[in-house]
Amino acid sequence: MANSTSANLKLTVQATGENSGTWGQITNTNLLILEQAIGGFQSVAITSGATLTFSNGALSNGKNAVLKLVGTIGGAVNVTIPDSIEKTFIVDNATTGAYTVTFKTTSGSGVTWAAADKGTKMVYSDGTNVVDTAFTDLSSDFSPQLSADLDANGKNITIDTATGIIDENGNEQLKFVTTGSAVNEFQLTNAATGNAPALAVTGGDTNIDLNLTPKGIGRATFNGQGKIQSVAEKVTTAAIAATGTIQYDVLTQAVLNYTTDAGANWTLNIRGDGSNSLDSIMDSGESITIAHIVKQGSTPYYNSAVTVDGSSITPEWQGGTTPAAGNASSLDVYTYTIIKTGSATFTALAAQTQFA
Image (cartoon, rainbow, N blue to C red):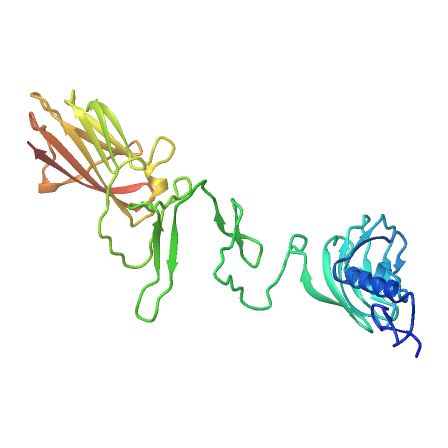
């Protein structure tokens, strides 16, 4: 019986008793063809297209596992393999020139790279046509899609700093920023019926703060009812004597503590800060409460006028009486609740309390 040839890789199939003296050489060639099909790489110039070869009993460019298509193309080109070949290929379109490249069988329609697509595809020939497996090069695919849920299988997902998740319209939705040698992180926990999902801080440190930082003068808004177990307010302490016009920046602190004896009656101007008015950071129907601690010496003074964003306002004082003096050798604590009732319109509820 004479030798025959396999259908796909064109290996020499030796008959019993044939090829005396050359059996080893033929077998070695078959093994090299198998190696080529499993892990072989071939760069193929396709300036004007190409037909890949599958020679009987010999190494051939079409038998390689990985094909890199190169060259400058001046129009749409085809890379063709014979009909009846059944084989898988990894094909890298590394050509230059904005034209389509089609990898196909002689009679099939094949798989086409768009003019701007210079990526890698895994394709297979079923003996009639070349088909795209959809296992694409993710670095070249600008919109890869999952056909099922992504299971990390106990592994981490690595995200580069300043990158994140975008929505279906391509807009930023969540961005991650890395910190070198980070040991603390967020933990998100879902919940069963009747329980609340949780956002927690975990990590290597024993006590870990949670920072929520709006941009610019933006605010953190919590909708619905709230429950706070404890809260700490920012206190600014300064060795300053109350006198003249004092600028109270509500964006900087909730309590302003002056530790030097007051030197004269003063006007308190309440504002956002040096760049933002109180009116610009509050909506109508909102209130803010602040405190001013003033140290008094043997000759006391008092807050004789209040302005908001530089405009005079007459507070409603606790007890119905406007203070006309301070309290000697004491700490006078002034509290102000400012309610915005309209555009640049405010109601102020104020109190003076002596501590000694």
